[in-house]
Structure formats: C-alpha cells, structure tokens
Amino acid sequence: MENPVQPPRTHVYLRLKTETVRSLKRLQNQSAQASIDDLIVKMIGLTDAHRSSLKNFGWRVYKGYRN
Image (cartoon, rainbow, N blue to C red; front, side):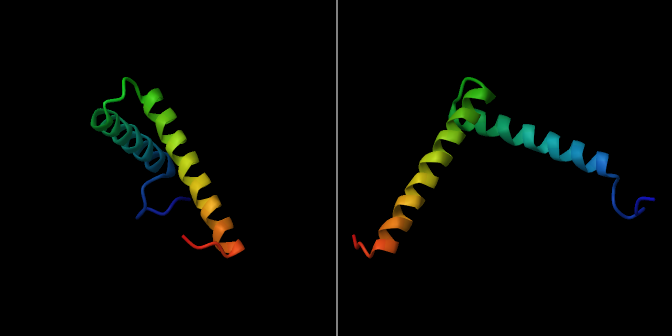
C-alpha cells in the first residue's frame, strides 16, 4: 500500500517527464536550436568535450604538470 502523504509513483514519473520536456523546450528556445533532437545532440557534444577536458586535466595533475 502506498503512503497517502506521497503522491503515487506514476504521478511523480509523469510530473518529472512533463517538467523535463518543458525544460528542454525552454533550452531549445534559448539556444535557438531547430529541434529538441538538435539540442540533445549539442548537449551530448558539450558533455563529451567537458568530460574529455576533465580527463586531460586529471592526467596533467597526476603527472605533475603545471600550467
């Protein structure tokens, strides 16, 4: 039996999904992307570049390089 204080999980899932789509559409408009798919591709590219930058920085620190 679900806790009466908390909304059912289905409601929470649907609210999260709705908020996510709303946020993606807002980001799409702010970044002037033609579609949400284009926005997601751009976000994945930025994330990969950032992750690569952090990895390279970590190796420089590990090897003792200085800027």
